[in-house]
Amino acid sequence: MTNEQVATAARVACRDDAPMESVAGRASAEGRDLDPDIRRFIREVGEAVARYPEFGTAPYPQVRRWAEEVRAPWCRGGPQMLQTWSTAASTRHGEVRVRIHKPCEGTLPALIYLHGGGWTLFSIDTHDRVMREYAARARCAVVGIDYALAPEARFPVALEQIVDTVAWLGSRGGEFAIDASRLAIGGDSAGANLSVATCLSLRDAGHQLLRAMLLNYGAFTTECSAEACRRYGGPQYMLGCEEMAVYWANYMRGPADSRNPLVCPLLARLEGLPPAFLAVAECDILGEQSLRLSSACWRRVWRHAARSIAAPRTALSKPCPSPPSAIGRWQRPPPGWLRRCNRGANARSRVGR
Image 1 (tube, one colour):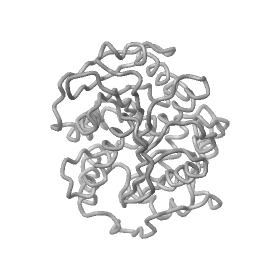
Image 2: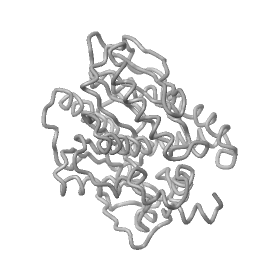
Image 3: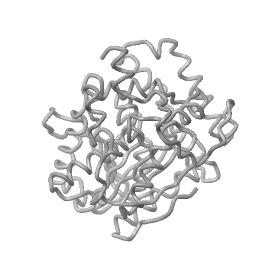
Image 4: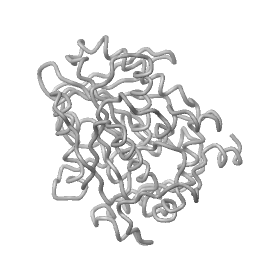
C-alpha cells in the first residue's frame, strides 16, 4: 500500500467525529497519571528500544529479531510447567507452530492464547512467560499459536490459521490431556481482535463455541477518536495513532476490509458469543474501544466482565508476580474468572478497577 492508502485504509488518524469514552480522563504530558512502577517500566522499555536506532525504519524481519531481543528479559523465570510440547497444526495455509504448556497432572481445560504486536510483530516466544503465568494461575493448559504475521500475510490468513488450529485442537487435544469441551481463547491487542474474530467465525459456521474469551486491551475498530489520540498518543503511553495506522494497513488487504466485522469486531453482531473478560488499559489510544465493546455487550445481554487500570497496554503484558504493584493487582482477576468459566459458573460482572 502507498502512504496515501495507509492513511485512507486505516482511518485511524484522529477522527473528530468518533466518540471518546475515557474512564481515566486525567492524562498529562509527562504521564503523571500512571503508576510509578509502570512509568519505571516504560523507561526501561524505551532504553531497550533505543539500543536499536533503526528500529522504526529497518525491514520487518530485522525489526522482529530486535523486538524478540527487547522482550527476552520478560520471558525469564516464572512458573515451571509439568510438561511443555512444541508441535505444529496443519491449516489451509500450511503448518503453524504451536506450544502447549501443562502446569499440573490430569485432563485440563485449555486457554488458546494469541500474542499481540499489531499483527506484525512478536511470537509465542515473546509471550511465553505470559502463557506460563496464565497456565499456573488458572490451572489450565495454555496453547500458544504462532500465526503468520503481516504484511507478508494479510487478513484473513492469520484468522483462518487460528480457526483451523482450534479445530485441530478439538480433535487432537486428548493427546495432550486437554479437555476439548472446555476451551477458551484470548490474547492481547491484535490477539484480542483475533480472539473475537475466531469466535465470530465459529459461530457463523455453526461450530461449537469456545467456553470463554479473555480480551486484553484489544483493537476492535480502525477508528480512533481525536481526543484519544490527543490524550494518549504520546511516547509516554507507548502506542501512537500513526503507528497503529501502520499496523492496520499491514493487516488489511485494502480499505474494504475496514468494513468487515471479522477485521473490526465492533461492527459485528455480537449475540451468541461466549462470555468475555475485557481488560481495559485506560491510558491507551485503544482503551475507548474496549469500553465501546463492553457497552455493546450490556445492550445485547452478552455475559462479560471488565476491569480497567490507568496504564498503557505494553506495561500490562509484563509478567508481575508481586500483587502489591499496580500490574500485579490488575493481573489477579482474569485467571480466577477463567476457572469459574471452566466450571460453568456465571462469570458476569460489572466494569470496575
